[in-house]
Image (cartoon, rainbow, N blue to C red; front, side, top):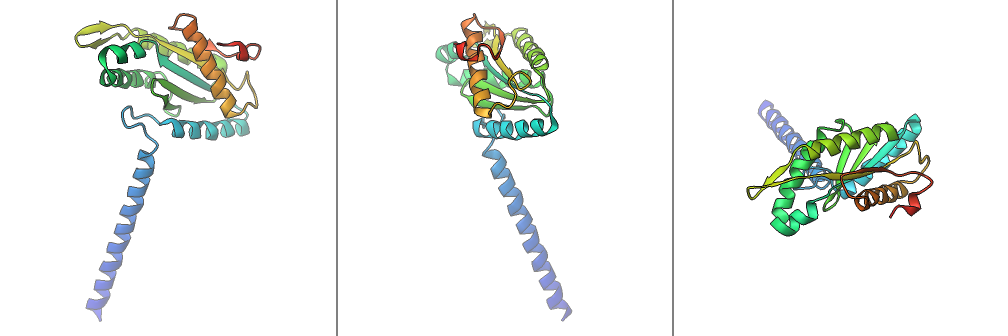
Length: 204
């Protein structure tokens, strides 16, 4: 009868709504599993996944892609002097400043505790260098205050680009970018170093 049909329709509607809610919750859980809970960036697994996706897209589109490794030069000292909570507060601010220097579709992730990896699709080595310099100047021009003490901040970056290293696998790109960052640190910090083919194995 009509009452039974109406009841069945209501039950079906409720079941469909419950299913939609479960799908939404699963999507949110999956997204949360890819996000760094403190900084709100992608975590290491997610940023590596983004790198693999973007490198394939750029290869098919015959466009360059760049990686940018960056680390705040004073972050270890801040952690040792003020603790992990102060370090994380500084990193949250650094993330905001970095995001103001990159495009909305550039991916950014926390690769290690104190190191960020950015994936810049379509960016040549020249564009990546300009982005890294913009980040460096932005961080340097915004000193922080910790426990009422002024703390000057600088950032070092290592860059690698597929217009210089074509057909290179993601793992090798990451290795060379890490070496370029280490080279920037060894050169005195507050620097940007671009990995070059004639020297990647010599960067130390």
